[in-house]
Length: 123
Image (tube, rainbow, N blue to C red; front, side, top):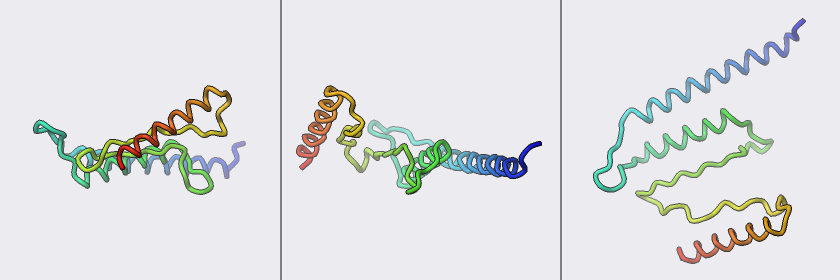
């Protein structure tokens, strides 16, 4: 015999997933309503475009992964509007404590030095 508590949880989870998918569909539909074309440079990006894309990606992450106890997700997405911002000038750094070999530690240090050089160049 099926556990009624577990069955109720599964139904609620299924409803939550369907609500999230409907929300995602609405956001994507709104985002794609108006196409932007290049006039020789970058295609225009409005604040609403940028915000809409960020919201879609954040919802996608939330739909795939649950948060940790602090509310953080295991994947972080950064979006750059090249009309208003420089390209991201850094390499993501692996966790030092997860490096298992000297080669991995050297690679982390090399990436950190690259980040420092890029930051110095921007200054």
